[in-house]
Amino acid sequence: MTSLTPHGEPPRYFTFPALTAAGLPHASTTRHCPGVTSPSEPTSPFTPGARETLAAAGLDLSRVAYARQVHGADVAHALTRGGVAGAVDVLSTTARGMPLAIFSADCLAVTLWDAEAGALALAHVGWRGTAKGAAKAAVRAATGLGARPARLRAAIAPSIGPCCYVVGEPVIGDFTQAFGHARWERWTRAASNGRVMLDLWTANEELLAEAGVDPARIENPRLCTACHPELLYSYRKGNRGRLVTVAALP
Image (cartoon, rainbow, N blue to C red; front, side, top):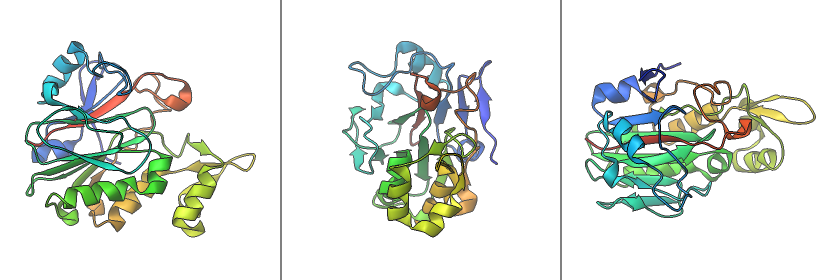
């Protein structure tokens, strides 16, 4: 398990130690970060309070790019303009200083960065995105910008864990069709009434590794959103708030 560095009391956002040490401005917010809404709202998902808070992480949200996330695996490449990049779940850029933002409230937010190539990709990955290949699409997006998979640093933000993620159909059918029964059984354990506990963390770590990412360079704190209602939002626990993971090339 990788640790997270908290910022504020109570923590308003976390940073990943390895990404910080390598020099990437980034943050994954908690429910205590003011002024973060959903990208589906008609106005900007960041109020001045959020912009001020995340500026302390080295992020200039006046240029932030984000998406209308649709639980898929399509990619948008953000150049120099911020705002809505499209109805996609993977964002990539080579523009220095322009933040990319992924919103979540149980789903995984995955950050991929190759410092040498100056390539950055962020992905929103829930069960549908996992089945559709969003993690591998993010790796392809980064490599399309000159990154090498083995050089990528990856980080998985707080998200729902196998301790709490109970699923049935259509998840079972879609996953077994996409990945086969052997991997499905490796990523799950039995629950009640024909349902199972799904481990999206392990599934996406394995899928990133299959795409060429070094497992030793994947940071995952395994901090479950559903287990920590005092700190994080969880859609499955009935929370309407949103967490956001933001990163920008230095």
